[in-house]
Image 1 (cartoon, rainbow, N blue to C red):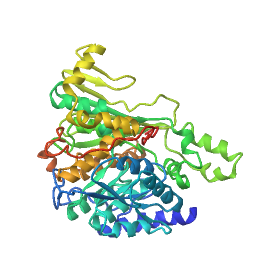
Image 2: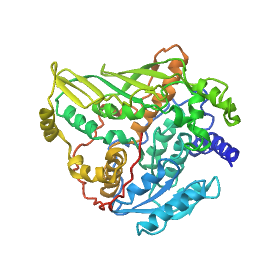
Image 3: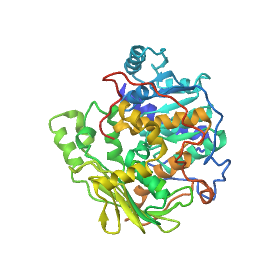
Length: 482
């Protein structure tokens, strides 16, 4: 089974995604560089998906693909949202599908159609006329091929992060979404965390003045988890760390600060530089495990990405962003989320703090700021989001907002250009690292429309009508770690 899945993954990357968009011959190399990639001048925007409002869907019929790690919690969260019909469940492992069918049964919901038993089962699901929206929670390498195939078959699509691994895949997503006029959203849940939404609204209201610099990160000790035989199918996440060297997972820290900076909506990333340390732990761990378990021998050779990667970005308007990635060092979890402006600053870790001048606001003053600047989505759904769960509620808030936009025919908060730009940091950082941290241009996936695209809407104007079901006692979609 494992070898068949690896063949399927390789064929998917080299076949389906490229063929579906006509970008044959533009596959990425194993080291993250790209050959024959579409340049800014090659891409002519077919349709501007920023601000695009698709036809209203009274009922959003969802098909889920990938029910191993993130998928089950996503299915459960969606079961609380009115107007959602969970109509299809797909995973290469049949037992996972059966487990989620049992969950639907226990909730008194209709059974969904099962797709499993073959490596192409997900394609059959995407081809079904009875589905409006495909929700993808598979390993990273499948995100773009599956999303492209779904849009080609008339479905809106969303995937876990990152949305793409290569620049070519980023362009595939953009071109397919524009041509089909189907939404694609990368499910960046951290954009819906409570402090991030608070500071976004404060920035919009001018509290921080002109934004000068922002920082974001994914600093999370996953060393043991990456070597755990049962956590990631076929050890796919460990393989990512073994084959690539850069910021492999930039979007959690980057997504929220890009909204603060109105990236793709008034400003854009211009170029970046990236530097990685040596690997001081992963290869050592692999050799240690291989010495007592032959399973790990194939992971005990070759190089691993550096412990910590630091990437800096300069925007067209002269602002800067610093992004970090460290998932092996024994350091305290942090996404940084730092905003620095001409009038004040905010910093989330180790504790949420806001300052003007040289003084942090006191606890009672922080409460006053929260009352004044908490955005409408939090007052509307925040309490219920905390009850349902999902990283403290931000997962549920993201899902609810997505469904509410689809049901009311509203533009999505995160569109395909955001997915492409945030995901592109991965391969671009790899290229910079390989070339002694020389600067690398960031493609303009909007083809110039960033100059006039409207910022992310912070009110629920035209929406907010989607109801939620109260979770039963001791029932929630809790999930630890991000």
